Length: 279
Image 1 (cartoon, rainbow, N blue to C red):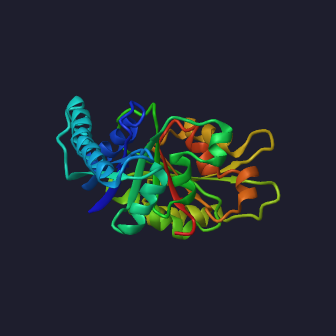
Image 2: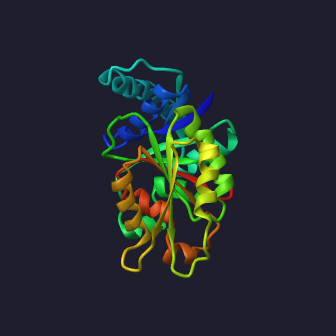
Image 3: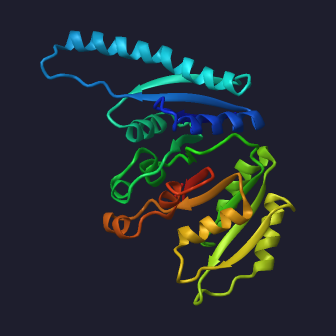
């Protein structure tokens, strides 16, 4: 059974990540782990025993608050909970704490959390969702705050064709249990070497089913790749967009050529599933 870590900060925006995870669990048997990262400030004058007592009270409060928050969402949507558990982690920032926990607990298969958008400078230097997308070895699902529950029926796979065969294997593992169709989209450049579309389409159908499709789209110089992706999302109307991102980039590459997966996450109108190319 796949295990999905679902993060929430109790805000209305964070409910989107919970709703997607719940929808997913209605279509596939999953173990959902709802997690909240608690940062407890410690005044320097507090002695250890006083702080430890205060921290224990804070943790106990949130251990009660988290189940109530999640179960209320289940009730509002008339869904009977499947296998799930709750986890309060202590840490300074949600992204680092979640990544550390995932590294120490190899059984986590996906991380799911909502995103409500971020400014350009904030995106470059980090948000919880953005940092997870660009640094986490565990696949991350970023869910826009506007998400409403709907069956997961179609995936759009944006590919640069450099490692599409191993990427398709990961897609198969995700799409298979959901019985999703897959539309693969590759944006071509004028100087790009020719690709055998028929052979690729045949390979895609063999691994992902006859309902799957492969599209070549021209990447014009007028619109950015993110804009072209958004246009294809409007046409294809996928339940989830899947991307693979290169996490091995230096600081200046990140500064001047931001991760397209991260950039899209803050503009997306559909949930975005991001795998690391190196994983």
